[in-house]
Image (cartoon, rainbow, N blue to C red):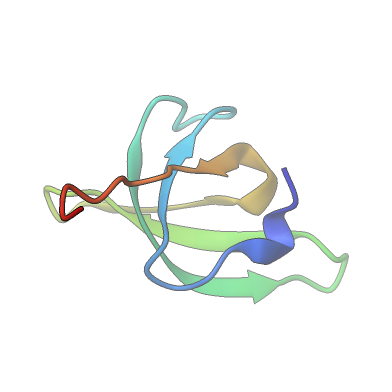
Amino acid sequence: METTNLKDGDYCVVVKGTHKGKQGKVSDIHTSKTGHITITVEQDNGVKFKTLGRNVELKVTTSSNR
């Protein structure tokens, strides 16, 4: 996945790393001096954690308004 497509408010699932299996909304996107993308993920219960952008995949949400 190309993590440069991440933007605030996207819903993602963590697929690697310490927080594997957790999901939530992306916020606070930064690029470090070494070029790695770091993000904050806020879960539905309000708990926030930081992870690397390469550890997440965007979760496609489908709309039931057809």
